[in-house]
Image (spheres, rainbow, N blue to C red):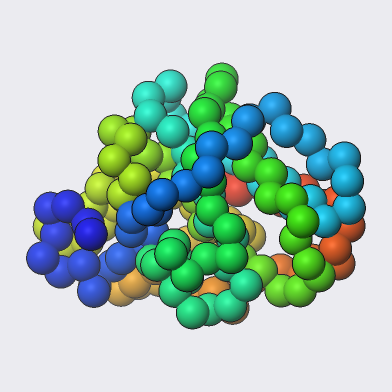
Length: 154
């Protein structure tokens, strides 16, 4: 799934996003049940930004096919916005990647370090030998319109 890395187990951050629904970066949080993710620090206008919403630690953040919802959006002026609608109350974590080459995967080095910018909710950094933990990135969602912010990092 990841390119250029035989050691993907060492540091698989986000992996492939698979088939995703496109969403407009201009969506707003008008109705209850909407969770908006405002992404900053997008380095350039290339490619797309992928967002995955996880309802459990299962698959976070390396198996987006296990996410509750996922989407790609376009970036504008160093920012992007993903809006998940119809989200039930609960505990969630979000993973984000700047997919510069639009291949649906986070590009990594031979040792598994990301070569494309990424981020997770609560702006949790990577662990010493792996991706951020769900428990540190998770947040409570009451079911009403909410906005969280994620700053991309490399």
